[in-house]
Image (cartoon, rainbow, N blue to C red; front, side, top):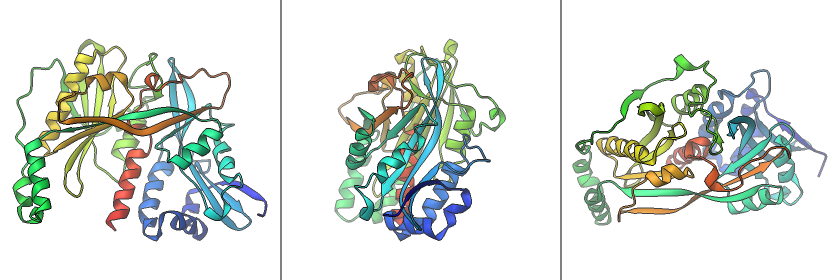
Length: 364
């Protein structure tokens, strides 16, 4: 191996032949257009990016050849009411011929000197092992919650698909379900179509949030994450929660090979909101998902209050979802070390949008 260098890419480097060769060798040639669009949004348009600096996309170079890759999403973690610089690590890989030579370790250490905390979610088994050897703590999996919203419709569609009648009678199921009668909630709900008017507000929409750690939710974060995302359309609702202030529910509805799924991607609310009120918020979300024709309701979260607010009927399932790992880079930082002290949802990192990128790739 020639002398190994770790480099950061500039936006124009994403179009270089060497970078394209590295990405297509790892993901496949058909990934390129989706990957490029995804990275332009994820890194070039991120509100945390300093335009005077390169992207937070790191590559390992062995002579003239790119042999490894790691990208990090800069974020702010709120711990005990204080904000600390942190990163989510994504798309970490080393070319097979160069594995076992500390290339992955060098890439993992690229953000150690700059950020107090490094976070990782959705690790593969191999990736988890490498991260653990480099100081990351595995604190368990998020809860993956799945519930059938319209069981009879879902069972009928599956049965007809097995009989080969899916295409013939699909039109029978294209009409959305009638909106159910809403209970009289002490919650005022209104759609949000942009946070652009609040883009200079640096405050956390969840308040001080001293009870558990989580990613800071600023209006700029919400605007970028949900309204600038090129791969999906999200529904955002502002929920006025009486004297507790306001929160935000974010979801998307999409069709896969058989189901119409409604995924609660994010739930932003201030500390102190009772679980009973969160149950009402979840009920409002479910009501809107049914009206949009969703047959299945899903979410992934480590938020203990949200987990309690999710109903547990017979036609629901709770199982381990993506795993969460973190590393403390600054020994002076005191960070919760158990999953129930973190408030994490799919909207915290790229796991949800990475699945969108994969779905685009598989559709080509």
